[in-house]
Image 1 (cartoon, rainbow, N blue to C red):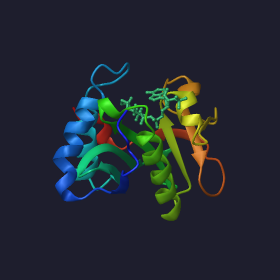
Image 2 (cartoon, protein in one colour):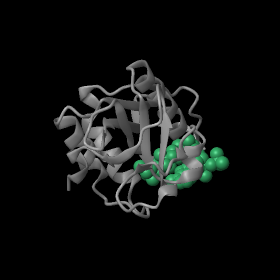
Image 3 (spheres, rainbow, N blue to C red):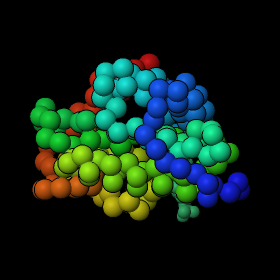
Length: 171
Ligand SMILES: CC(C)(COP(=O)(O)OP(=O)(O)OC[C@H]1O[C@@H](n2cnc3c(N)ncnc32)[C@H](O)[C@@H]1OP(=O)(O)O)[C@@H](O)C(=O)NCCC(=O)NCCS
């Protein structure tokens, strides 16, 4: 495994945009439950000014990871909650801590912006390590509750039905 100790996590810059697209498209190839549209989703969120937090992991001048966070609605209301994702790490560098570093930095950034909470759709044990847990009071469509997790960042747990930004309908 390549040494990632010189890696830095920083906000995306405009020069990163094509690299984030390539990285995201490649990271999701062959991933179960992937729509294979995650790269387009990141671009659509950015175009709609809905990529509230967008961080890249840079190693020796190359973008090797990316995470985005966008606003979600709860029962149709913007109450300061966000959705984590997509999150991508270069296929050859997965499993080395890059994704964890991006997610932790992104959650710190959201907290500093005054976000009240964050939701994520994905593997429960993986996201559980960042403090996410399943809360049956916060629902996302017909997704089994264990795969839809939330993390309170400030204030009270939220209750209701979650709607992601329309950027997630990008194809
Ligand atoms: C998911 C992803 C972002 C995680 O980043 P990463 O840098 O590979 O993961 P980390 O090194 O931070 O964490 C590694 C740990 O997470 C586990 N893990 C990694 N990817 C996982 C996944 N997709 N599901 C469940 N567990 C996963 C590993 O088994 C490892 O566990 P360990 O520490 O107990 O050995 C990355 O693997 C990736 O880009 N995957 C393809 C795209 C994807 O599935 N994105 C998430 C859905 S939005």
